[in-house]
Length: 128
Image (tube, rainbow, N blue to C red; front, side):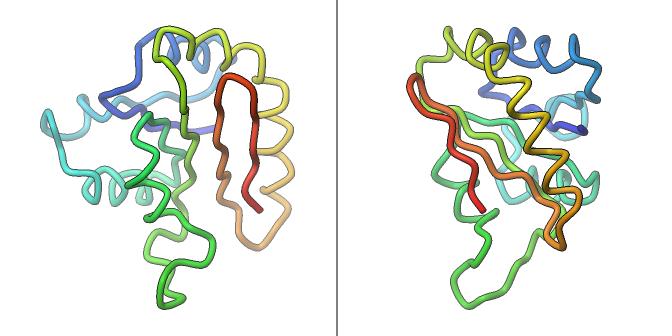
């Protein structure tokens, strides 16, 4: 997987993905600090990346399978949204890594190859 790590994501979460040999890019390495979300989405789309974020609300709209007006602006941009205390994110990422990797392999066989996942303390939701 190619991941674009948003500024709000603890490095411990990025470390989990790196440990599992996924390609990790940091927003702060590619763009200016505090880059606006649409610019992050544009960069992620160009990379064919999955944005890892705690900013659920804005990226949910940008990566919707059927967005308002049926226009998919970011056709290659995936999203993994965490909805929990940031300190617990690395533990959940590690626990769920086999499922994240499985779902990533599954979407690669579909027409829409974007992986869209929401993770909370008690839920793992794959948006199909």
